Image (cartoon, rainbow, N blue to C red):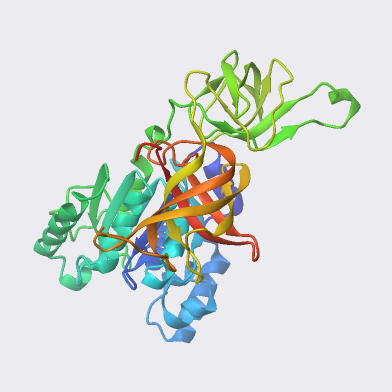
Length: 430
């Protein structure tokens, strides 16, 4: 098991990969993550001892590694994942943030939440069951969320005697499904998460499989091009004005780069005001840098005291986002109270908060088949559909397929302060 000092040393300077696991109930998502953590020596001795004790009390004949992620009492009692569980581990090549998302249809909203920031998604499939409804559902959702890399892990191959024909049949079924989706990078891995075959180490039980084990793929998948490095987008989160006398002339704009590359000397424009200026300095926690790119958090200095506030967007004068109040979006509804036209909500987009009203509901999408049902009057819990809405103040946005950060938003019920919907913006022309 790793010590905290070893983990910290391993994580310094490594590239970060966010990935989520999804699939049907009991396909082995939590077990897979537990196996990754165990085989990479990323859990502490007291954690392993606790899992061993709980496994023994439950009557399990083995150490149930799924308990490392199924932390809720209801999850352990029912043997299913309910909420999104985040886990962290690192290897010498990369840092990882894992979102273990629920497989049950009832918790589709949790799956959307966990996968929304992922670079990669692992869809687990029980080799005995093949492609089922939740496989199609989660594959479509990962496509809607524009997750760039998709791994189909055909799990529990030990229960079908490592039969290559079973694996090939499932692979062909998935390729037929993926042909109808917008997914550009597919990978297929036969494995047994319970026994660790093809998870961290290559298994000798699959001589017919020429690809890498899962961890090797996670360490090597190329994610640098996943970010939009063309369109400069810098949502201002905070105006930095220290109150101490020695910094009386200090004025910077803090935030996280959402797109493009910011460089000192670049001419920029602040939206929605349209005032132009020039970048004089870019600062990070570790000191000044000459350029910044996603997902760096920086403080940008401009050569003039322009009026910049939280929620404004800094971009290039000749490459601007869409600025508007009338929006079209795909939305996943996350609450029992249905979405209905004319309803009003608080809207959070990047660092800007405003209010919005639903002005239209075009259709509801069947996430199993992709079929669109028009003429509906509401969206219920876990439904996905296309809506129109109007905001009280203009927002600066891009189409979601172009920039996942500036193309997404959430709706909040002002009475309860609960997040009720997660949206993906479409272009004006659609």
